[in-house]
Length: 157
Ligand SMILES: *[C@@H]1O[C@H](CO)[C@@H](O)[C@H](O)[C@H]1NC(C)=O
Image 1 (cartoon, rainbow, N blue to C red):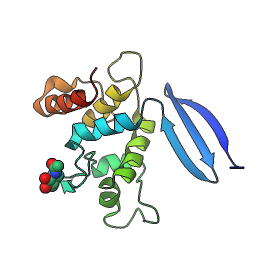
Image 2: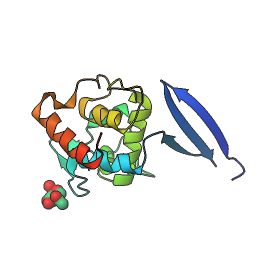
Image 3: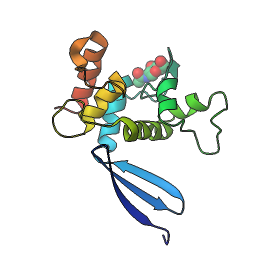
């Protein structure tokens, strides 16, 4: 642990803790904990780990290729971004998909619902609405209502 450095950053109002340990980066966003990940995948697919790719969305978090690209093309260890299947194989792996989602929130995470904090409720809105325009309420259409219902059952407001 001789190369352990602790760097505190404030990016777009988000507190990010980056621990660099022997060249490996582990990034933790405040309020993006294990429970939040479970609720985000529950909202998307009821956390179905074997769902595969359906209609352009892959894995338990329903990650699209555009989302994956926006998140910096995270891949499985020793894979290559250019390889056909690199996106799909990462997105259908729970552990790899969590890295995609984390990167996406580092880029787009913000207080979508305007309640003064950036937390899992906002991350849920970002994953449904997309990072560019996360503010519209989820209950404005049927897929959004169903998403919110699953999310709220897992993480009540
Ligand atoms: C997960 O998705 C697969 C593929 O659609 C389906 O066959 C399976 O029944 C689902 N599992 C659960 C627990 O819903």
